[in-house]
Length: 263
Image (cartoon, rainbow, N blue to C red; front, top):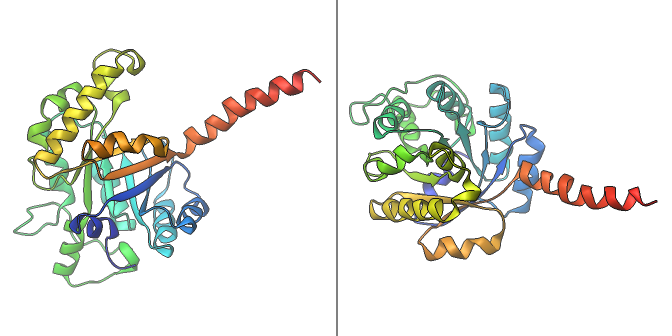
C-alpha cells in the first residue's frame, strides 16, 4: 500500500466502514483485515497504552490487508502523538476534546505540510509513513501529509455552540459527536438526557453536511445504521473491542455464574 485509502474513498465520495481496537497486538488488526469487511481500523489511543513501535506494527498489519488506519488521540500532547502516528503510517487522526474553533485551527496547522500553500508545521522527518516510503521528493511528501484525514470529536457544549465555525475551517475533513463527553460538559449523565444529546448530534450532522464535512457515526449493531443513513451519514464505525468483550464477560459471564452456582 502506497496511497491513503481513506482519503481516496472520501475523494471518490464513497461510504467508509471501520471498527475500533484497544489492543496494540497486530494480530487483531490482521484478523479484522482477513474478514474483508472494513475499509479501515481505528486504534483508540486515547483509551489505551502504546509505544511508537506498536503504532508502526498496527499500520503494517493494516496495509497487508489493504486497510486504512485511524488513531484517536488525547487533547494534551495531541500534536506530538498525531505527528508520530502519521509518521508510523496512520492515514487519519481523530482528535478528542477540542473546545473551540481556535483549538481546531491550531491542530490543523500542526498537521498540514510546512509549505507556502498549506502553511502548516509538519516538516520532513525520515520515518516509515504509508508503505515505508522514505526519502520521497519533498513535495511528494508534502502531498501525502496534506492527504492525512483530520477528524474532530464534537463533544463539548462549547464546541457544539461553535460547530458551524468549526465545519468551515479548511482542513477539517470529518466530525463525530461524543455523547458521553458532551453530557459531562453539561454536568449531566448521558442516560438522563438522551433526547437532548440526540438532538445535538443531529444538529452536528446537519451542519457538517451543509459545509461539505463528513459526519462520522459509531454504532454498536448494524440495525442502528439506518437511522444515520436517513440523516445523510455515509461514514460508520461498528462496535468496540472492549465493549464487545465486556458484553461477553458481564452478560454471558453472569449467566454462566448463575448456572454453575446451582450445581
